[in-house]
Length: 279
Image (tube, rainbow, N blue to C red; front, side, top):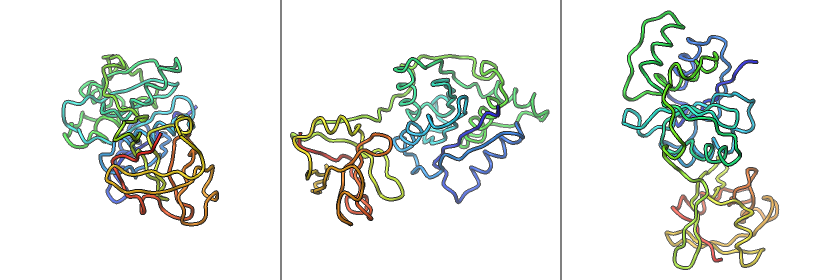
């Protein structure tokens, strides 16, 4: 069975960076199957990148190689890591973006290992396979020089010990928690963690947990930490409210989400640091 490589970046669609990564992969494994998860993650946005990965990986075949390049620390001391968890592989920077997957898989008893990619060993292995000289490693494009080659080697069933010999424990990687709440002025507040192209705002709490702390259902008031005040209705889908009205619901991944029927919540509410509710 062919091992698919899944790409997620904040590179956008105007520059050649994604295409170059695909070229590198094909140069190492001409038969590689490459799937674009998204390249529309907002620049440097670890939270959005973590959410997109966490809510997506379970829908792909076993042994898929998720290659995540949202990397504001590129070229710094942050580690390039390779993870085997939930019968999938994950490659990317150690900046918290893969942590929710590691945590979830560990809790499910389906975590195997975390390895640190050794760029020197990686490039030597690539040279062995391609028959071409070792290329130089840039300081600013590890998507091309480390992560894409690592994904290509995994798709060829190369033993990861050959280019990522050092293992570390989950508590030694950078942590980022998708589920997060904080008390402010007697209110419970959540982070907006993802905004889709329709302007729906996913918050850092499971809807089931949110519903359990509400004082009442139906109409609900909430406010942003910056002082904006809004009213919406707890519902199950957009059409539960009139066009242009706010609805709060469980999105397709189980997170609390704020939307507007035939409208954009982010256009009305903006992008606040926190959204707060009475409880």
